Length: 117
View 1: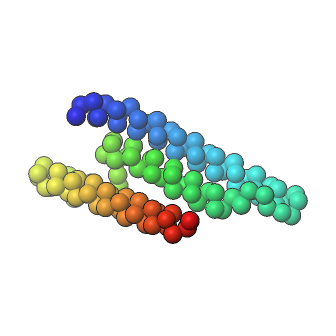
View 2: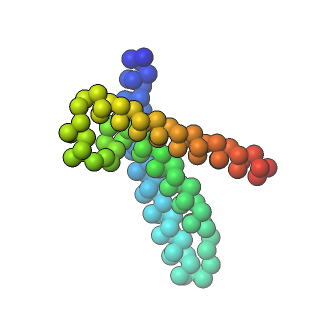
View 3: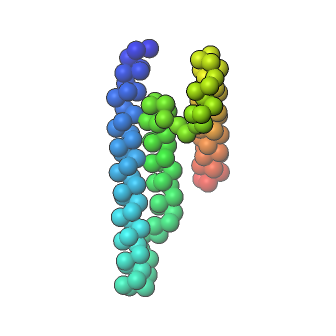
């Protein structure tokens, strides 16, 4: 179990940086698309679709790092007033809901993929 935790502690910051690099790539792609559209009157990259998919990837990479650091947005005013046991249960429920949403996204993506081909 400790090996998995060490691996996650090593990989999560790398993926967070990769997510940040993807955000920079999105900015470059959109800038090139706007520039070529204004100069030539045509679009070559179709940056909207590319940036939407890249943004989803960047968000998922950032969420793993945020979850590992425990930095998800929550109401700390209320969390600080709860006993430790209640906070642990709420943290567990937040990770469970995150896993449920991730599973839903994976299922719908797989279903879309299978019906596309």
